[in-house]
Amino acid sequence: MKSKVKTTAFLLMLFTGVFFTEMVSAEPLYTARGISSWYGPGFHGKLTASGERFDSNDLTAAHKTLPFGTMLKVTNRDNGKSVVVRVNDRGPFVPGRIIDVSRGAAVKLGMIETGTAPVLIEELPGPAREPKLFSVQAASYSVRENAERLIRDLADSGLTAEIVRAGEYYRVIFTDVSEEELPDVVEGLKRMGIRNPLIR
Image (cartoon, rainbow, N blue to C red; front, top):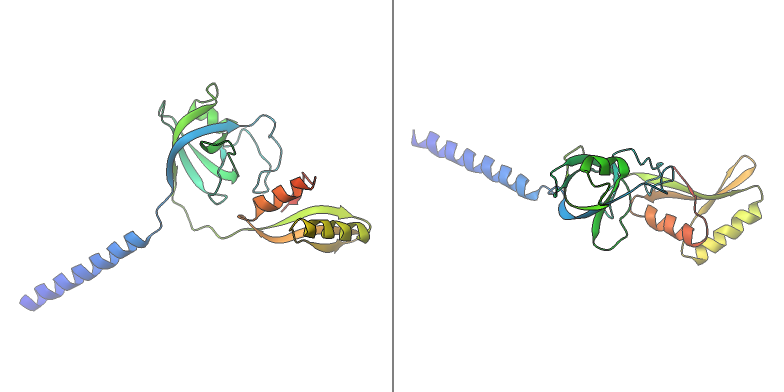
């Protein structure tokens, strides 16, 4: 009898220990409190940092660091209204703000008139996200020398691209760009006057 009790106690301790270890080692979901703003006018239809077209009516958001595709519950702490948004852009770039939501999300949060609101951000659990790699086309030329000239200019700015021939055209492309690298590549191209790169 004592043997069975000891065995049961040992198994319980073992299970509890393993379970506790898993709970402690699991990465916690992101939460934050701060000021949210919203954006839409002037950006509708333009490319976001993730490469997709911005639709101000969709329930999306811009965050500085969270992976694209992260689902967040955003709650307006002034009125208790909540909305679930998907991160597909980078920002905000105004000091003191932690998230920029789309106009569609701002309507549901009741913050259209105020422009900003104190919010609680909570990441929603979901399947593990596979790293996504992008291809960024800076330009396309019918003359190879022009593509080679751009490659040199990019190298002088610390950007490394390659020339890919497609039929009669020579495309200057950045390949295998990670989500973390994408904003830097896009920003670097903007500084060189290339404001509408093709992101796939």
